[in-house]
Amino acid sequence: MSGRETERRIRFTLGDALRLGYEYIIRRKNRAIINIAAIALGIAFLSTLLMTDALYRAYALAGGDRLGVETYQYWLMFVALIVSVVGITNAMLIAVYERYREIGTMKCIGAMDRHILLLFLVESFIQGVVGGAAGYIIGLGAAILSTGFGIGFDVILFVPVTDSLGLLASSMVLSTILSVGATLYPAFRAAKLHPVEALSYEL
Image (cartoon, rainbow, N blue to C red; front, side, top):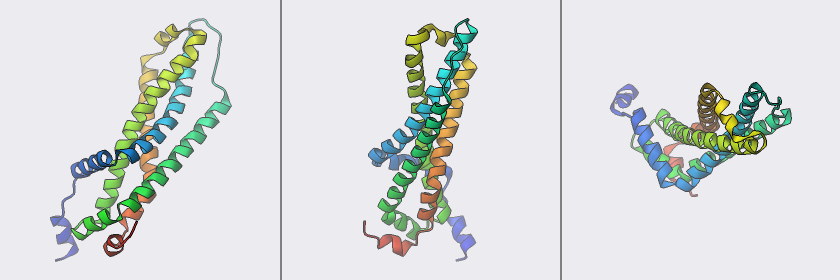
């Protein structure tokens, strides 16, 4: 049987990857929670700073003093995001090692490199979306609390809805990019595993 005929017989759709990725996250929720928390914390820091700046701008437009976020805080945010990416990459590498036998079995029954790659990337995509949403909510709450006691909680009413929605969208996009980007190397390693090597691996 030619490679092209084999590929035609093996069907692994995006829906299959979503289902398997979700099932793995549920089955090993402790590791997934660690990844989601790493993403959420980085995004929460980002959301806090950007929403705080939006609140200060709204306060200034309403007649208050012009306040702002310090530059060094943005550098701290950048460091937090880098730490998140490193943490996710490390966790996904460990996940690959833990699933050597599973990957070997999948390859023996016909899974191709691109199927394994897609499975890991979809899994990280799900975690990125959840982590981004959680980070946005945490960051929004932190920004309101940190500025509300100083300039009044009613300032939130002066922040344009488009700013809040734009921050939500950017948080989701960034968290997804960070999560998927951090998983590329571990996913590539998993995809290139030889079935015999994977099945004989002892954790």
